[in-house]
Image (cartoon, rainbow, N blue to C red; front, side):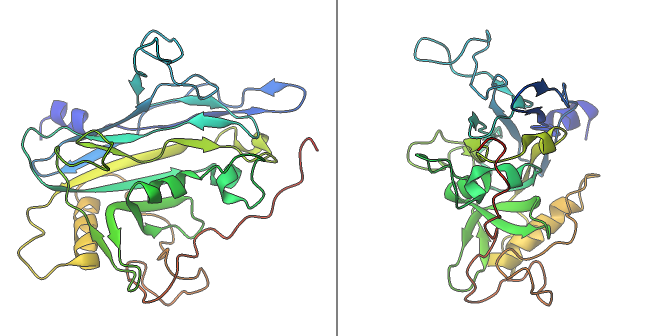
Amino acid sequence: MKKKILTASLLLFCAVALVATSVLTTVALLTSSAGVSNVFTVGDVKISMFESKVNSAGQPLDADGNLVSVTHKPAEKVDTNSYHLIPGETYVKDPTIYINSGEMDDMYLFVKSTNMIRSAEAGNYSDRTPGTTPKSMREQMHANGWVEFVRSGDGVEIVWVYGTRDSVSGKITPTPVNKATKQNADATAGEFRLCDSFTVYQHADVSLYGAASVTFTGFAIQKNGFTGDDKTGQDLTKAAWEAIKGSFPYNTGIVGPVNPYVAPTDTTTDAYAAVDGVENPYYVLLTPPTAQNP
């Protein structure tokens, strides 16, 4: 693959520098974001990944730096944003995969998420911000058709596949998509949203997240080569993911992989195996920390 093509298809996405805040003063623990995450493609398929440009308060901006409203142009698309975290506030975060292939080539989509602020998200607590029902980024991905395929033991890293999971067997089947596929009836063809926003828990100690980041890495692999054999369902998902993992010099694996559909105490089940009749126990509600400003 030529260098310029590789550069175009390897797009590091969404390294987010988070800035801490306290009651009396604001301290910038990380003032810049470096570099970019990656979008990988295998075969004759092409994708890119961007999110809306926002200011430090998480409000979307147009290309001229103006707040987006009915009088402004749509939000500018970027691969990196920085946020100033404040407990109880909600921030726009809408990473989206765009299919750029010229032909109607079917492909399978995967995403690896690394969410170092998951314990600060209001959606992971039963005691949510009064008057709102914020969903975590993970919950939003589920609603958008992404299925957890394998995750790290601490839940920070998750591999997702765009597809379906059988509610009885737990088996996961990838959904083939192309540039004409719509994620839902109101979506633009060829665009696949991950999430829309995140809300900081009202009692979160944001000083703990000054050097944290949230990254999403997109992967696409052509459907051809995974059909016409005996692979179906989860075997097909695993085969496609393994092919991606072996094709690039990037850490696509995760530490201590576990099956997200079994209890965390179950250490006997293979991380890629499906388990019959097991509800998703992922994320036991966290114990709310002591309020910073009661």
